[in-house]
Image (cartoon, rainbow, N blue to C red; front, side, top):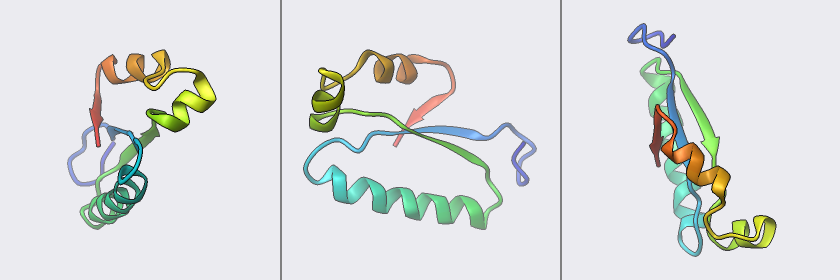
Length: 78
């Protein structure tokens, strides 16, 4: 439960992507983590592979596991 709201933790899927995403997404996640901590929100962060790194490791730019996680109930993308 989140201390601020009494709700279940917010679940956020992190899609680093390629190119600028490799620099921007981690910085944005750090800011979001700090904001959540400041306001007592609990967040479950779920890194989800996508793009070139996913292609190299999984053989697909959008792996089925990533797509399934995005389609699952309760996921937001960041």
